[in-house]
Length: 230
Ligand SMILES: *Cc1c(COP(=O)(O)O)cnc(C)c1O
Image (tube, rainbow, N blue to C red; front, side, top):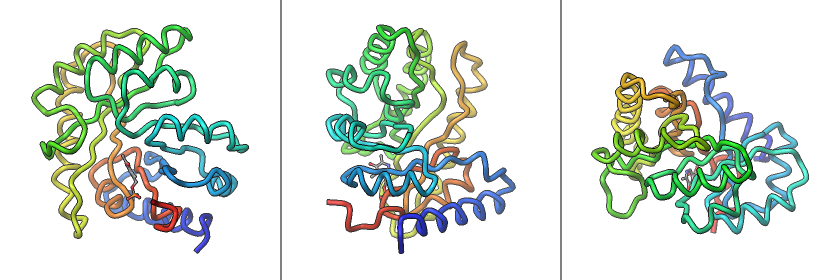
């Protein structure tokens, strides 16, 4: 199957899942996760209508941004070291993986130099696995309150990455919990912050995520094929 064909199938599946849950399909955006994918494959996806691309590594993102010829929007979705923020300042439209205040402060500092504000999501570690990134649920509220005060950063919502399950239903409680947390934070009416976006769902479980309220699904292998992934 071609990249264009895969994209069409995914859009159909997103649409069906959204309608099943009584949601407007246009409220769900597809982030094509292009880590390890060549810039030509990325251009191919862009020509098929894909606009938003998610990258995990700073160096790879910076290199690809120079090679890709189609107009695309970059999202950073991987673990981000503070000392690398400068390299992606102004280049990415959204950072999904803000998990600590020191990182939020560095994003604020770098975007401030450009006189701009960066859209960010707070990554929550619902599973409490030591190996996965994300703020713990206990630190989440404090992090949101502190980061919301930073002028060159706009909190737009939450992101999570559940543990892997063979059965996508296994991920449902994690997606539901992220949506619940977003509702709880939203009710606090913290100034300069909104909980409009939920970044959740990958190739194996995005339909469940859409049913639970995802507005951004991050899909890699179902678009580009397993062969692209090292
Ligand atoms: C790789 C990756 C994805 C996409 O995973 P697939 O299973 O290939 O769809 C989504 N989110 C993050 C954070 C990733 O690193």
